[in-house]
View 1 (cartoon, rainbow, N blue to C red):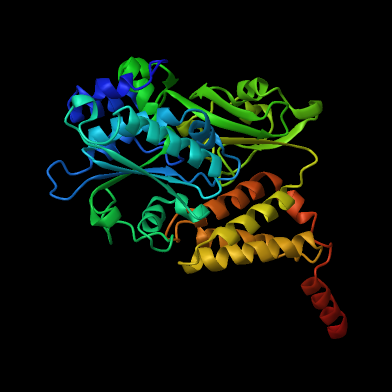
View 2: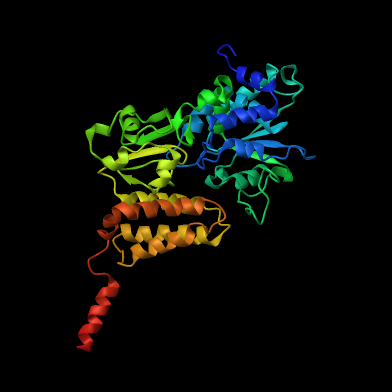
Length: 413
């Protein structure tokens, strides 16, 4: 509060809830967790006259490999998150908020819990906040350590004490804004998304929208890691060229040439580190237009010492381990992707293995209950697009099937 904290919340509480949503709309804010869905559409979709209570759920289950920006926010600026929760809860007419934090994030969990307690002590939470007549309670809930619970319906199931598995999606089931936690209207937002509501209310939505370009407006936090000299979390205007972001992070580690980079966390397809891709602006539309995604903002750089198949093997082990097992394509597909990569890395690869990997990816993508299946398939598809030759180099010149065919041909002759 000494440094102008909670001024945005006080401003919001003097506005009509719909007016707050209009400011978010004017800002062009999109979900910062990976999907990039317009925030104002989600907030505006909650029923205005429902008899059921409304709930705000904050997704702090940051499990995407290569991403640590929410951890930084919760660790260093937990009150920014709490203030954003007040703004969002007021806008969607919710009196209860749950902050769901990844089980391994013990330190961020303590920081956020302490901030919530301090906010209660100052009368910024609880009954009749700042004399506004608005009541809001926030509960910090620690997960048990599950990548799957980053998916909003699985997160809600976990929050209610059920197994962390995804639910059916529309049209066979209603959206969370209609029936979420405890069958009540629910908004699920990422930590960074809600925290960004604070500067938007402070400066105004139209002013915030002056940053960025096209439909990718404002700034975003990026975790830059890998073979760079200054790996860390950085805030950039959306649309900043990737090369500029690399230079800000100190350039390639030890001056070694870079081989490839992953733009948005481990589940997004990679690009080779050549001018064509390094000069791309990092925003939602440009990444989609070039066959990848901005994702959660986990920008990872790799030099020439890294084997692409070896990296994919490690990622497949992760996704197979984290699959909740509810749906067959993901449960079986991630398991077989891992086994085939192990066979290739052990020198027992077959010529048909490459096509089998791609066929499995095609059978996983778009066919699983949630995006975990897509997250496992897309990295391999991206790797094959640019580095198929590294997979081919792992296969003996003559596979077993080819040798058998040659022997049968000799017998026939």
